[in-house]
Structure formats: structure tokens, C-alpha cells
Length: 198
Image (cartoon, rainbow, N blue to C red; front, side, top):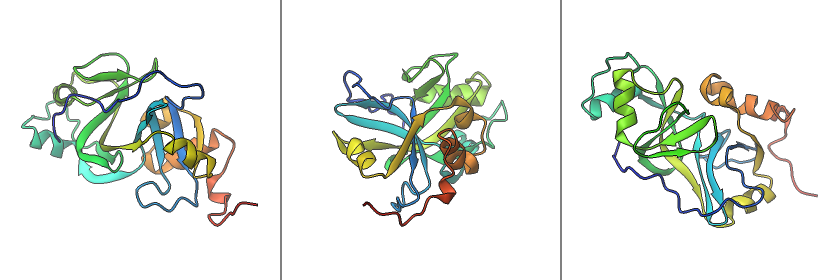
């Protein structure tokens, strides 16, 4: 995990219809290996592009391995937490989605409930038991260039729904895809993966 203290935000003002603090739910027909059956939490979305963290794709890594890489002792016994694959961009970088009680060196407040931090200090705090009450650790992020996400949504690659803190932090990662879609009243398992356009 590299210690680059900046979150990749090259985005200016939010645009009307911004999907910040929303979930992107991959449609069954989206076969891209990086995003098939994923839920992505959008942290930034403007006319310059979008950035988010996939919240339901587990890596084989546990948090204790990151502690070891950073020479941190797991004083608080947090090390068994599964690390997510946050997306295909910069997979060596760590990102922490967390509840909004505390700010760290590099914290982006996405909503009143949820923040994103990419600095070493939050990992050290987790090891010492001083971390946020709720968190999700991910390696890498998902990024879209100008107009790219809008085009993918228009092509029916994604469903969008306002994000749920409960799904991010309290729902088992294997259930987040179906749970996020259920917020729209949709059972994604019943949508044909071969649906075409009329």
C-alpha cells in the first residue's frame, strides 16, 4: 500500500444529476471482468469525470497483511477484516470508506455519513484502535473520464440508486449487489444477461 496522501479528485463543481453518494449497480449483461456483478460507491462525479470504490469484490488479502507491510502492530485486533478490490486503477493504493466521526490527513467528505480517506494515518489508527467506528478498506479505485460514465449509463450498463451506509458497512459483501438493487425494487438475478435494445 503506497502512501500517496491525495485522493484522485480532478473534479470541480458537482453537476446537476451528479451521482456522488450513489451506488452504481452493474447490470447482469456487463461482462467486463473488473465490474461484473459489482456495486461501486461513487465518491466524486462532475463534468470532468467520476471516481468511486467497488464495495463487493473481495481480494484474498486481510487487513493484517497491510498492517504487516506498514510495520504496524494489530493492537486492536482488526486484522481479520477482508480487503476489497476497489477498482482497476492504482490497485497498489489503499482507500478507506468510513463513518464520519473523525477526519484524517487526506479525508474527502462524500456525504454527511460517509468519508473517503487515502492516507497512512487512518490505517495506523485502525491498528491502534483509534479508527472510525465503521470502515471498508479497498485497494485501487474505479475511474471514468469526461462523459464516460454518462455514456455507460445510457447504454444500460449500470443501475443507479442513492447509497446506503448500511449496505456498505453492515451487509455481507456477497449480498451487496442484490441488496443494492432491491432498494430499487429490482431482483437483478431475474434480469436477463442477454437483453437487447429494441
